[in-house]
Length: 100
Picture 1 (cartoon, one colour):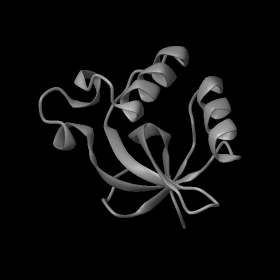
Picture 2 (cartoon, rainbow, N blue to C red; picture 1 turned 120 degrees about the vertical axis):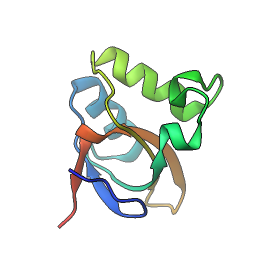
Picture 3 (cartoon, rainbow, N blue to C red; picture 1 turned 180 degrees about the vertical axis):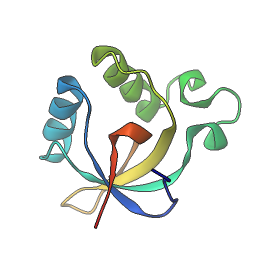
Picture 4 (cartoon, rainbow, N blue to C red; picture 1 turned 30 degrees about the vertical axis):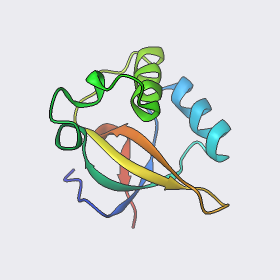
């Protein structure tokens, strides 16, 4: 699938820990994310894995480790909550499903 910036996609987590993470944080295991950019474009010096202290990167590292997921193409975007807050998240391309 070709991921297009500024489009919205449904997150379909590949592992149980990721489903639980999204369910607890957003109230659904399949939130909608608005994609902004590839991680290696946002952080050209090593991508998400080299960003010490960045909450989105730390949480993504925990999700991939717990679910034994090998990150392929990694994208950054925002998930808007019911309250209107936009939280930054990293997702693998394999976790994204195009909205119809």
